[in-house]
Amino acid sequence: MKTRYAILLSLASGSLYFLAFPKWNFGFLAWVALIPLLIAAYGKSSRQVFALGFFAGWAALCGVLYWITPTFQAAGVSTALGLLSVALLAGYIALYFGAFACFYNFVAGRFPQFALILASAAWVALEWARNYLFGGFPWGSLAYSQWQYWPLIQISEFTGFYGVSFILCAVNIFLYESAASRQIRRHNFGLICTFLALNLWAFQGEKSHAPSPEALGVKTIVLQGNIDQYQKWNDEYVESILDVYESLLKSVPSTDLIIWPETALPGWIPNDPKILAWAQERVRKSGTYHLIGAVTEDGASNYNSAFLFSPDGNIVGRYDKMHLVPFGEFVPAKTLLGRWISVLNDLGGFNGGRPGQILEHPQAKIGAGICYESVFPEIARAQVKSGAEILVNITNDGWYLDTAAPEQHFAMNVFRSVENRRTLVRAANTGISGLIAPSGKVLERTGLGERTFFEARVVKRKDLHLFTRAGDWFPILCAIMALAGLFIKRKMT
Image (tube, rainbow, N blue to C red; front, top):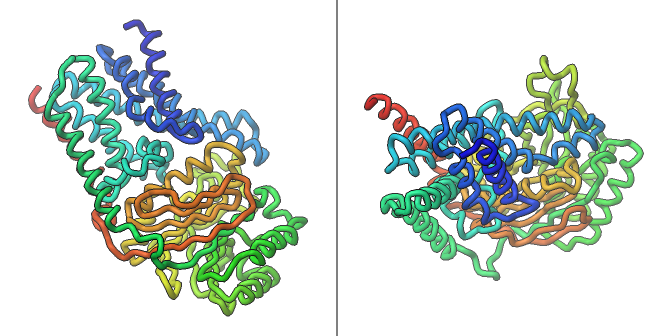
């Protein structure tokens, strides 16, 4: 195949990949997105295969992450730097695509009968590495394209989202190999059927655990203030921001818990006496518990936190965000990049909190996550393992304007629900707020840019499933299988 056609096929793979994600949401394309790349890579040298895989990954992630540029523009950072940031971050992730393409070509040439399982394992191992290396950035992992098809992601209960990525990669390879060789390898077909059957079994099991519509739960109100990101920390808008939340609070019915978005209060808590007193007065008037996002100064450290207020206005719990947003809350490699890039928020840099923090509401133990933390499965898993009976994600996605980022961010919360079999409540400043069942089904969802609230019955659960108990056993197993495939072949050659 001529090089220009191979490059076009690689570009086609990248295009199919990013179209499977929000805002486009053609999730079915993920089941075939890798096939053009596999066709393009056939018969090429290792260097050419890596280049084709890299190009496909770069095109895919540029499409998924395009929203970084308008985010930088809105923050006053130059468009050129925004475009460069997209290109560099997509280029970093594209290295994993190139490695996958090389690995598949290697095992397909030497272990053709086992190429599907080994290459799918390698894909998972690479996604797992991406979740942790250099602070971790799993955004755009293959499984997340399936967030709307909740009956198909139930295997996450056992494997985490990695199991869904494995199935998707395996199906791509199976379809490609079946078409190329015009024969179906029965063991590969059996492997895919086994994974799909396991998914069906988990789906049926979760259906049997689903509460009836009349089931009691924690009566919860979620507030969505829709405050402009670039007004939040401007002193001229403090009173108008407080008026927005006071207006929403006057409209809400009696409830057990009211959840506010990330950094909802325009001040430091409890360091700003005026803002603290305002919040305490509104909490007392409501006569219920409030979970409120605010920043806090504790000694020499600053934290992005969630405060649990009791009905008498006292702070009875605090969760400090652990995993901070690069460039939004801290500058990575500050000694190198700090000369050109400052933290994008108006408050300066933040510090990370302690792991395993649980908030104690009288009716349920709450695992609270803030913003970007919903991207990382290990954070919610640790909270549930420590006793969390419901999950809450508070966020401020106003940074991202009307781009695909808020929906991409929302989608990842679906997997945190399924992995841990917990109801997840999400309060987002500008949207998307929502309620997600332990099955991954979205029960409530607000629009982007709405000023609103919604009521929900949040059913708590105590059961622990395989992923919550055992964590990353599946991607570790996949990494061992992929490495063993390389090692064994070297011994045989």
